[in-house]
Image (tube, rainbow, N blue to C red):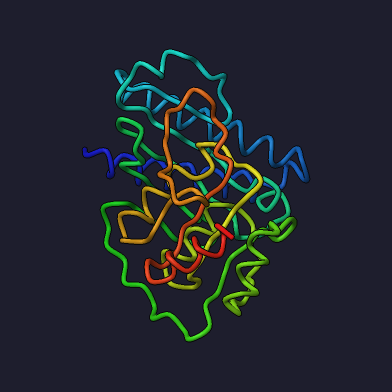
Length: 241
């Protein structure tokens, strides 16, 4: 099984598990989110340690270990990206399974289980044609000021959405042209989405245009841009002002 096939399989399995937990109705609110996080994390970590025992691992729900820093191959996972959306019964949450190789988001799978969608870095996607007016996905609770400024300059339509994975995959499938985030994420929030987006030819970088680096000692990723390559130069120029 290739790394991409494994990532896809695990993302799908975790998604099915999360849907089953939500359907049981045994938990609600924060307790539902916690139950989902814990169960999906346990499944993913167990599978990766069994099937890729020589690789490093970084998960939102596991205690970090400095041992990963000396490894070339490190799996970076977010068992439930968008815990709030999951707990609220929404569809805009995701499962992220990625493999970083020498600091690059090389392999990734992002599952949107409530939508029945799976995006994998080795599977080509035909994006819908971009409309004349670009669309920008932003946080539904705290859209960054930078995104609002860029949207105003480009007359882009703001599309509020939940998890990072859901927003990034909206750009991947052609439902939006720009995903701009400022204010901090962690490596598990965007490694898998970046792997998928980059494999589809989308532009991915920090807001200053510098490359995204994974398996760094600090897990924080301060900002992120995923967009249609045709818009990258304009967006970066606006951000540099």
